[in-house]
Image (cartoon, rainbow, N blue to C red; front, side, top):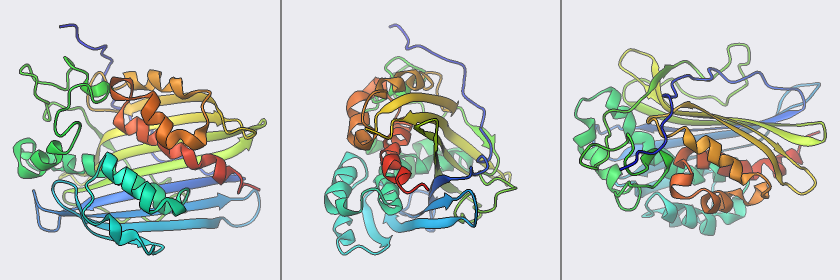
Length: 334
């Protein structure tokens, strides 16, 4: 069998966030996972988000903020939920399992808050919960065969079937063992530093210090106007605390984009694969340019249609889908 195209391992973090630009807006989101009852048990997920305007003169202005608290089962089913700001229909999400079902339910039930930091967090619940249990790989030698991983894996892909679900899991690739089953042990990961810039204490919303087996999915989207277009610099990282007192990341991307403010079309895109688990994963960055020319406001659906299966990366797709809110945010720029 021919193996999918392979690349050098992506093992270099971009480091802390850049300094904020004058006349820019920065959206930051984080979803923290913690297992109060231990390995293999239901766990807490806490989402935090903020939109911050940095004017050319004067103090930064918080445009919006949001959050959630979700208690989820090992099979990624929402057992309890609270959202901020409160929403009268949020409790209808109890019982929904993460994945396509949760995204559809969130869009149908909470569609009236699309574009807000809270909606972005909830939309990211599917991806964040899928990866959360990976942090146990840093703490337990039996994590891959343990109940936490087994339960999460059974809800991944097509009911646990991982073949060709994304570029990294292309059939015959390094993500699989010789017998064709997923290889959850021989993954690449990298030690990383803090995302907060030491000279910019307001660059991120407040994120608590993590220790023990705790996982964080963090996003940053910077946008500003330049030369008649909307410029975007976005960062994404899946990381967690390790036994050495530091942090380890399994996924990290940096994305640069240009958007036409007249019709919201994507004019240019560069996706940089910085930290990824398998040698095939970086190939998704090249294919992402297929989104050029499409309306960014439609990205939540268009990305999944244009970059399905081995044409895309689950996590890069989520980075691109999050750009759907950029045109609306750009209208809030001075």
